[in-house]
Length: 123
Image (cartoon, rainbow, N blue to C red; front, top):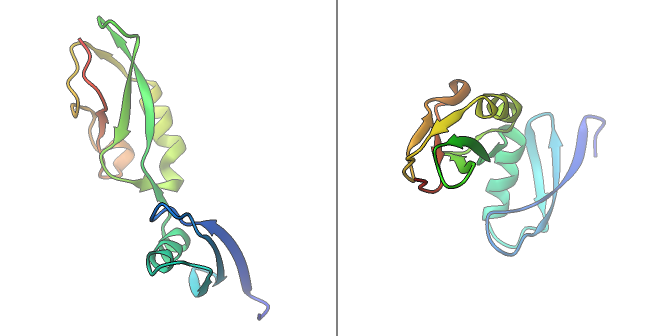
């Protein structure tokens, strides 16, 4: 291992096995991936180093429904670096019932290209 190389460990979530990956990196370059049980682990490790993303999930307050909150999620995975900003925007929302599953509650949240949508219907 050279001076600029670093080893990181990740649990791969690409399949149900959950392999513990040992990833050697130099900056944003993946030099090697070890202990992956399938080729998906290599792709996961490269994405996790270059541009980690997650599906955002939370709840929004609702008025006029039989429940006080509605579960929501991002339509597509968002950059991990944007999660706090997205959480702040979602916390500002108060939806009004009725709400349909899949209904857009925030369009293009924080300029990510993803919408925040309702995960269930409420009336």
